[in-house]
Image (cartoon, rainbow, N blue to C red):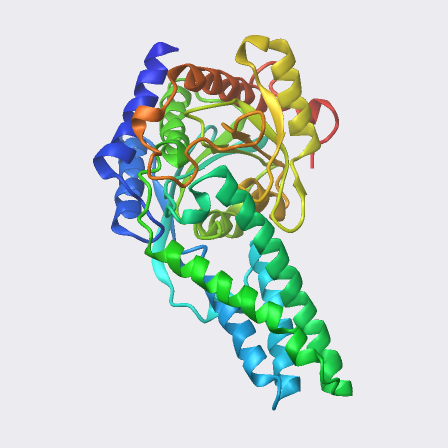
Length: 400
């Protein structure tokens, strides 16, 4: 195992130290993806890519939403129907945005080029199942709202209040357009204040620097390359494994969405194993995640993770419900692919150095990486040709 951890650490050091910050659609992201492509090619794999356009930010669509609410507030006294329509447009678009679906908030933003790089290992014919291993290469900005746990909790509370006020604005403006109640416009000032607050948060975020992203998520991209070398040496006989390094995860998962949209139809009985923040804590598996709506992981994969944790207590694996965020697991599930995320959050659900300037290589914990490596390796073995040659879900009659 030590050699594997050394290779993994070397990949992380190149991505986080040598290349450094890898913001969505930036030169750093492209260099990180090129490093992953070269690493896969050096193993003799055929490297392919998906190119796509991205807004390049998770914050810009919400800035557009704030502007829409302020425009609705300004328009209501003279154009109440227009104001109501704008309110509903923002609310519906925000729900779609937070559930990772295309929406008008993205349509008005300029698109910048990005890509995924990937390769496959396994049989060219007689494929009985597909296993997707996925980790994103890009890193996020470092806004104030992520600087401390208190700030993060305050932001989550504010965002809930702001969203509720936007919904209320759309409802009361619709009623006001019908009944012209005089109290409606003054009452809607709360939504306007929240929109100003949201705009300020988004602007501050957009002005903050990108993190080097050692834990989030050079550890996942580096583990993909490490696993690729091992799987190349001993390829599965009936399982095709996709090794996918995505771009623009930090811009509402546009890389993962592009990948599943383009390749879902090529897959046979697929399952997805998403890797996140595996350098400081864990291993944990996600029972569910979500921002607005809860997204549960696949039940059979949860059962498999629990079985492995019980059989190997030395790994110290545990289940987690992720609050206030989503991983690329949600994109796989939206494409109809059973999925689960293996993640290095603490037992109380905190991501070490998440979106902070301190997310650097020197913070990584080798013991945690060894545990995460062992757990992921056993999941991969069970979901490919390990044991009976069938994934646990297939043995339980849960094949999709």
